Length: 328
Ligand code: SAM
Ligand code: DTB
Ligand code: SF4
Image 1 (cartoon, rainbow, N blue to C red):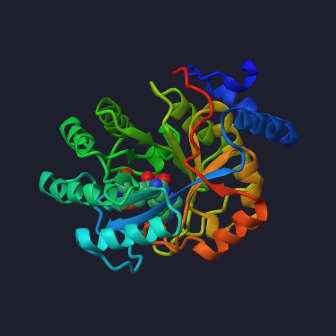
Image 2: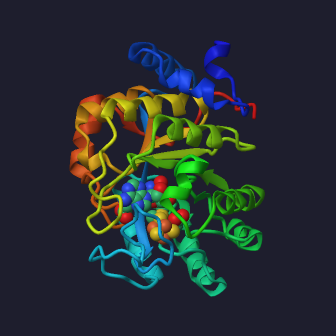
């Protein structure tokens, strides 16, 4: 494989990444797509379905999030759901083509007794033959170990932005708290799903800073969700200028070049995107989506629209396994 398209690096500098962002659009697209092709089936898309298993009343103050208790978004809070309702939703997701079921809770961190119930859910979902992913907030190393022993496949915990912009968006926890949980998850042998949000008013420098943090982790996250902010009335970021769609494509392209063996998810924000914009994102290296009517609390394109989009682009649901052994 051409060295340019295959190298797994953990020593990116921000300046170098800004240079990638500044390439001519065609040069960037060509390089990102070539990298993508060298590592993955370019027509395969991994499909995950999300379920909110505990909704709203979160003590954290993330300015983008409809689930924070601090903002009046009109969201109805809901306690931890039953394992039966998880099973029912997971079965429906599997039957409509998802390969992974992701469960999210609006917690700062789970209590040990919550974890008991969540472990029951993991085992039920695994029993259906689906991969499992959880996002529950911060984890101690013991909690991460327990989830690993229960058979959890992935843990989602995003870095969300550059270290300096993070402080503008969230004050109730630090970047180091995030890095600590990521370390605990990695050490427990779980696969890491870690990405961020753009369109929060950050600059290109922050987007580059986020990608540097992700790629310079001891291992590239196996899954990298790139969310475009879903603006929710009542949250402080509602009404902010949206990101230029071509800058969004550039962000996906640079993520693909920097983390060639990771699955990059075109995550929140697809409802507002045209088919053409999504097609460009797939071309530059996005190879995973959330599928189903809802993300956690906000709308996602329905299954019918996504089936039509995939047929229009000749994309197939797949596990999106890298087609070459990863060296780091
Ligand atoms: N409470 C846990 C946490 O913060 O890690 C898990 C759930 S939280 C909703 C998971 C991720 O969803 C956040 O890290 C953020 O990247 C994304 N997210 C939340 N609200 C969003 C929004 N309005 N638009 C786009 N992404 C959003
Ligand atoms: C991720 O990066 N995006 C997903 C998932 N991981 C948990 C969540 C998006 C949430 C969008 C806002 C909502 O629906 O509440
Ligand atoms: Fe809570 Fe997670 Fe939303 Fe932040 S992003 S307010 S931690 S649910």
